[in-house]
Image (cartoon, rainbow, N blue to C red; front, side, top):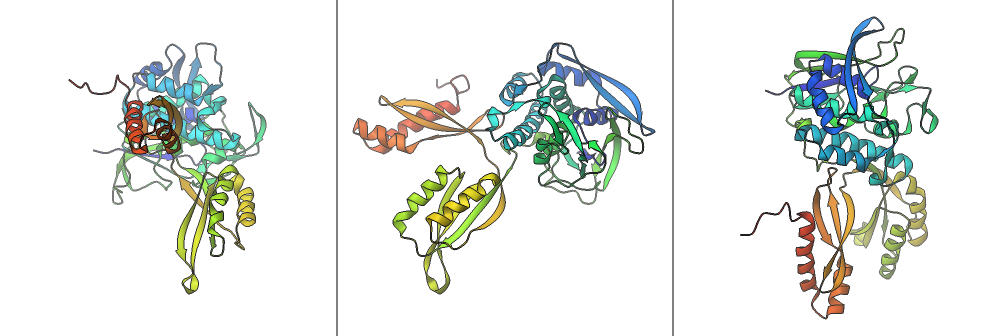
Length: 416
């Protein structure tokens, strides 16, 4: 049997609201506490109360912090806590996906690398407990797929650790890319944590799908607003009629399927540039901040050979890179379109081969697991030249050393 969860965030969504809705739908509080304790031992206590919001009954989950809290933590610190906890794999993967979505949004807003993101409110103990608690609730309720409806973001202003900001907050707006949203009401209705839970867990945005309902729940926000029930609702059941095989289990999705980031591609077709100039053009684009730049051979009208110059970049660099293309090539115009990139994280390690250092690029999933280990060929070539041996020999030996970085000695099978 499969269990589908649909999230109704039409009145807003926050971490505690979604957690309250799942508790109301049947997730046992004592077992949620056990999972949260595994990540944050002796740190928080969950409690539940029935409340009314605009005259409607709902469940309010409060997270009591038992120790002094410093609500400013790096994404890498939170990741290590989750990875080091003895919790079910599906809970770990769901929590990591949500925090990775948050980290990418904060990185985009502040212009820093994902691993350098310093969480503020969402790094507090209660916010971590909300995310881990929701992930645990999905596991305990046997949820195998998740979708959600449009999200109400709110309007006006809200006070944050950065001061007074417009609603939706910058990170919330970044997380909203590609999702159906609306203002609907005053104040902050969707928090970054709440929207990250929706984006990290839900497969797509859709109205309530045809389903045989088995349970439902309403989770309350802190305020009771006249004329608008301040709740997030969930509906559980079995999808019928339009069951979609692409709805892979949200809580069991492979962690390598990282959250997409929105980038832009700038393109120009050029048929009259001296080919000796192209390496300098590509180098100038990369030096100016392009994520990548490349050439594709094409045939233009009348059979003329030419190249398409493509530049991948962040939104904020489009103007700068467009100028580089127009100044360094003979094109009369540049076309642009939005794309989504699914990228693994990158880091560098150094190995020693034949007495020479060779850098190895590591690509890793959001949980820190190394997926690829690739030697830097320029270093391979330099080491081969210095050692007076063929580059292929150094490359083979570097690849062997690189594989040891992918599989530390403790994880490698014994060779008896």
